[in-house]
Image (cartoon, rainbow, N blue to C red; front, side):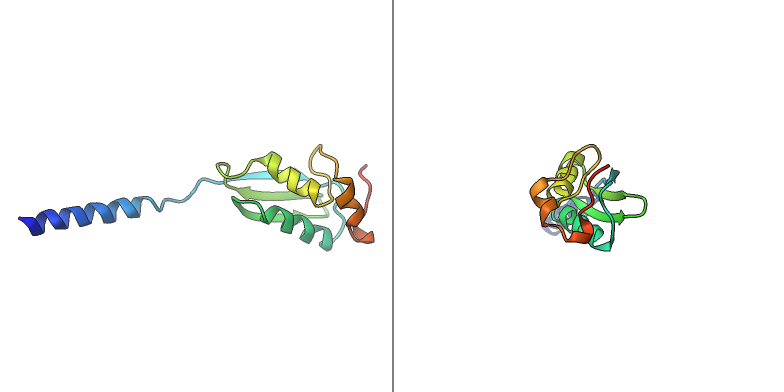
Length: 114
Protein backbone atom coordinates (compact mmCIF):
# COMPACT_ATOMS: atom_id res chain seq x y z
CA UNK A 1 0.00 0.00 0.00
CA UNK A 2 2.86 2.38 0.84
CA UNK A 3 4.49 1.63 -2.53
CA UNK A 4 1.28 2.45 -4.34
CA UNK A 5 0.88 5.71 -2.42
CA UNK A 6 4.54 6.56 -3.06
CA UNK A 7 4.10 5.83 -6.79
CA UNK A 8 1.05 8.07 -6.96
CA UNK A 9 2.93 10.93 -5.27
CA UNK A 10 5.88 10.55 -7.64
CA UNK A 11 3.56 10.40 -10.66
CA UNK A 12 1.75 13.52 -9.47
CA UNK A 13 5.02 15.41 -9.01
CA UNK A 14 6.28 14.38 -12.45
CA UNK A 15 2.99 15.43 -14.04
CA UNK A 16 3.11 18.79 -12.23
CA UNK A 17 6.69 19.48 -13.34
CA UNK A 18 5.90 18.52 -16.94
CA UNK A 19 2.86 20.79 -17.06
CA UNK A 20 4.93 23.76 -15.87
CA UNK A 21 7.06 23.64 -19.00
CA UNK A 22 4.37 25.13 -21.24
CA UNK A 23 5.45 27.49 -23.99
CA UNK A 24 5.45 31.16 -23.04
CA UNK A 25 3.09 33.46 -24.97
CA UNK A 26 4.88 35.88 -27.27
CA UNK A 27 3.81 38.86 -29.34
CA UNK A 28 5.28 40.58 -32.35
CA UNK A 29 5.79 44.30 -32.76
CA UNK A 30 6.79 46.36 -35.75
CA UNK A 31 8.87 49.40 -34.87
CA UNK A 32 9.61 52.16 -37.38
CA UNK A 33 13.33 52.99 -37.46
CA UNK A 34 13.48 55.94 -39.86
CA UNK A 35 17.15 56.78 -39.27
CA UNK A 36 18.59 53.33 -39.96
CA UNK A 37 20.77 53.23 -43.05
CA UNK A 38 23.10 50.24 -43.24
CA UNK A 39 24.04 46.86 -41.83
CA UNK A 40 25.98 48.50 -39.00
CA UNK A 41 22.82 50.38 -38.00
CA UNK A 42 20.90 47.09 -38.03
CA UNK A 43 23.52 45.40 -35.84
CA UNK A 44 23.53 48.28 -33.34
CA UNK A 45 19.73 48.25 -33.05
CA UNK A 46 19.55 44.45 -32.80
CA UNK A 47 22.24 44.37 -30.10
CA UNK A 48 20.49 47.07 -28.06
CA UNK A 49 17.10 45.33 -28.22
CA UNK A 50 18.47 41.83 -27.56
CA UNK A 51 19.89 43.07 -24.22
CA UNK A 52 16.34 43.44 -22.89
CA UNK A 53 14.74 40.62 -20.94
CA UNK A 54 11.95 38.87 -22.81
CA UNK A 55 13.20 39.43 -26.35
CA UNK A 56 12.94 36.32 -28.53
CA UNK A 57 14.04 37.68 -31.92
CA UNK A 58 14.87 40.91 -33.72
CA UNK A 59 14.90 41.40 -37.49
CA UNK A 60 16.00 44.85 -38.68
CA UNK A 61 15.40 45.83 -42.30
CA UNK A 62 17.14 49.08 -43.21
CA UNK A 63 15.48 49.19 -46.64
CA UNK A 64 11.94 49.21 -45.23
CA UNK A 65 13.08 51.10 -42.11
CA UNK A 66 11.27 48.56 -39.90
CA UNK A 67 12.27 46.28 -37.05
CA UNK A 68 10.21 43.14 -36.44
CA UNK A 69 10.53 42.08 -32.82
CA UNK A 70 9.16 38.98 -31.11
CA UNK A 71 8.93 39.40 -27.35
CA UNK A 72 7.30 38.14 -24.16
CA UNK A 73 4.80 40.84 -23.12
CA UNK A 74 4.95 39.76 -19.48
CA UNK A 75 8.68 40.60 -19.48
CA UNK A 76 9.04 43.68 -21.69
CA UNK A 77 6.81 46.38 -23.15
CA UNK A 78 6.95 47.98 -26.60
CA UNK A 79 7.83 51.33 -25.02
CA UNK A 80 10.90 49.72 -23.43
CA UNK A 81 11.91 48.34 -26.82
CA UNK A 82 11.52 51.80 -28.35
CA UNK A 83 13.57 53.30 -25.53
CA UNK A 84 16.40 50.81 -26.12
CA UNK A 85 16.48 51.78 -29.80
CA UNK A 86 16.39 55.49 -28.94
CA UNK A 87 19.25 55.08 -26.46
CA UNK A 88 21.30 53.32 -29.14
CA UNK A 89 21.13 56.46 -31.30
CA UNK A 90 18.19 55.81 -33.61
CA UNK A 91 14.62 57.03 -33.85
CA UNK A 92 11.91 54.53 -32.93
CA UNK A 93 8.33 55.08 -34.04
CA UNK A 94 7.51 58.63 -32.92
CA UNK A 95 10.46 58.91 -30.51
CA UNK A 96 13.56 60.85 -31.56
CA UNK A 97 17.04 59.39 -31.19
CA UNK A 98 19.02 60.18 -28.06
CA UNK A 99 21.32 63.04 -29.14
CA UNK A 100 24.40 61.84 -27.22
CA UNK A 101 24.06 58.29 -28.56
CA UNK A 102 23.42 59.60 -32.08
CA UNK A 103 26.60 61.71 -31.95
CA UNK A 104 28.64 58.59 -31.09
CA UNK A 105 27.43 56.60 -34.11
CA UNK A 106 29.85 56.05 -37.01
CA UNK A 107 29.63 58.75 -39.70
CA UNK A 108 27.85 56.39 -42.10
CA UNK A 109 25.05 55.84 -39.57
CA UNK A 110 24.32 59.45 -38.66
CA UNK A 111 21.28 60.41 -40.69
CA UNK A 112 19.08 63.12 -39.30
CA UNK A 113 15.40 62.21 -38.93
CA UNK A 114 13.09 63.42 -41.64
